[in-house]
Amino acid sequence: MKKIVLCALLIAASSVQANDFAPQMKEHFATKVSSWLNTPTVITAVKAQNQRNMSLTDNDINSLDQQWRTGVDGGDTTLIDKTLNNELSTYLKQVETDAAGLYTEIFIMDNKGLNVGQSSMTSDYWQGDEDKFKQTYSMGAGAIFVDEVEEDESTQMFQSQMSATIVDENGAPIGAITIGINVDEL
Image (cartoon, rainbow, N blue to C red; front, side, top):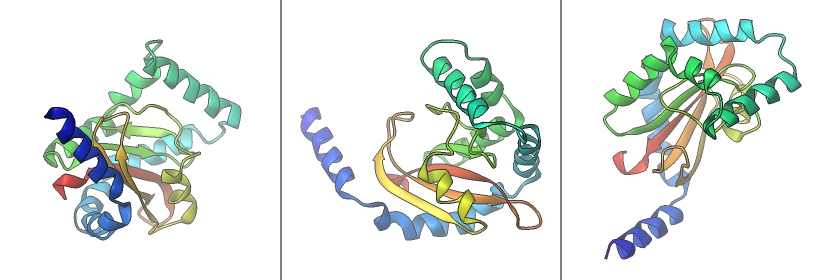
């Protein structure tokens, strides 16, 4: 019986397109996310990492991403630990907890697509080669990208990721955010 129910859920989830949820997700962003996203905790952390990473080369970014992936696979977790235990990650974990199951994950990226803070560990450190970053940060202020519904390997839940450009107090793009939304909780 469990297999039948699981198969039915998988079929139902795979047949739902992100567009079915996009209007609700965008409304949620406008009414809820923007209020906690535009806090000094977020803006200060992103701007500080942008400053620190200003001179990183593509090779440096690839090296950091590989270091992260090695940690995910059981190796050195120094970079993961540093990121998961910073002030921004602590804040995002609380935001996720306060959302009571609506958010499956939250992570914020700098202007290179590198993780600045996150509510839980991601499978990689560099998001700059993925649509969640390319369809937001590089598109400028106001850009929102809603992906298809899928099972996320990090969270093991069916979700749709909503990503958006983060702007500073002057409206200039400084990074991006991705929020996994549990579509059953919308």
